[in-house]
Image (cartoon, rainbow, N blue to C red; front, top):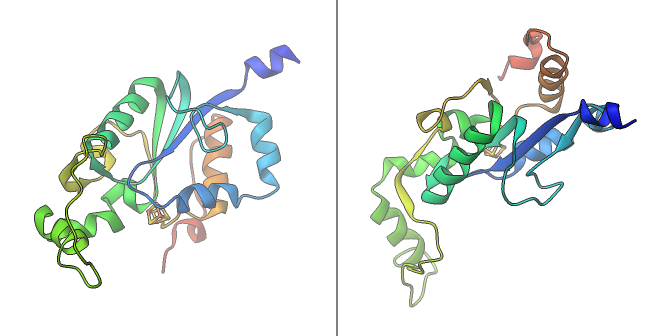
Length: 183
Ligand code: SF4
């Protein structure tokens, strides 16, 4: 039994500038989660509530990089994870959060906190506890080396399962056409 546990692959996950939709898609593999927990144990993830990533075999990152804390977390994942996967459009291209890249940051902050519809007596938050926003939202491969890209918004549960099953069993990662066809 102990020998079986020692062989489990350690997996860490996190959401940077994302909506947790990619994590929800992982949970949507439904009963195959039972097969998954036979193969893996979780490090930092919403399941364990571990805050700092530890040495892991596989890191799954959703979301783009929009602030200084995202950069710090992402670099820590890269240091600790042997294999790093960009999961979903936001991690791969910046996705929905990167829509703000069309506007200067100060205009976005003014719209959200000062002059936006319904804002009264607004002011831009300036607490040192708040992560410092970057001028632009970046895909994660602009900050660290990424080993695999798993596209979709979110990637379908079936696609995530195929990816994990093949990767964890050491097979080449291949998808059926229907799993990587988006229109
Ligand atoms: Fe959410 Fe889609 Fe971005 Fe995933 S890719 S974090 S589902 S918006």
